[in-house]
Length: 328
Image (tube, rainbow, N blue to C red; front, side):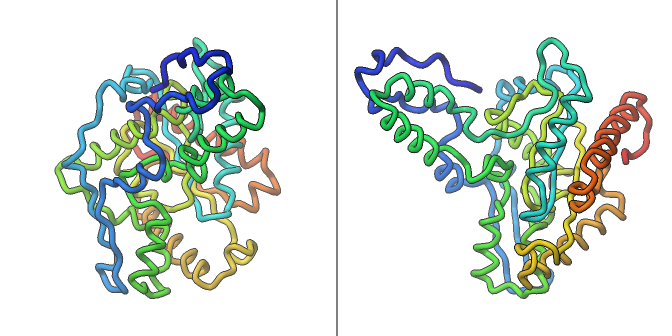
């Protein structure tokens, strides 16, 4: 999942124009990834069929060799943590704070990382190193680095931008506007993936393995905890496709506090999305989860994170004891 050693580029004599072609085994430029997707998605103005989403799982064949990079495939202890929430509600802050806390709470073994978060430029590090070695001036290097950044860097280091298996938020917004969906269904912008269905038996498992394969180059696959965040509430979708023990951490921010959440449509979305989520939780469809208040996280960060780390530890202890009961 990484480039081989970069070629000798002549100590800066050739300039950045001599950059090697991207290794075809690595993720393609982001625009190509977005254009070629493995789902059919549309929205209508309303009713029971507002969202129509089919995951083309029957066309997919996960690569066993690529998946072997993951620690869990080698029988080692490994956990997935999804951080869910709406836009501008602290998902990025919570992701990094939790990763740092887990790094302090657990001791590294044999040099293995404790927690890994996505870095959308990680697979292309060698291109940047070659650009640095090839550049004849600082300006030329910065220009080459900007070009690499534009071509390969996702808008944010979020799981939704590093895959083409389910609809990204921007895809949903496009369909929402095109279909003139009613405001009362605005919450579907954040929960639409929960309504996606695979087109083959065992499709969720296939999608889960393909998701790991697509995410693999963007983080340390040997880490004990793999943490991704995406500003949505597709919790049930990620529960269905899990292929390793998975904790869902949901952050909730009061809709009238943030300027970004004061827009009427966003308030409608807030109500609809969280109503959908809490219904799923109440029905017991999500095995292991925690709900965090954004306001509490900001005012009492240490206490909230300490409690969240304990949720992680207690879930692991219960799994180790082999109890046949749901994790909480």
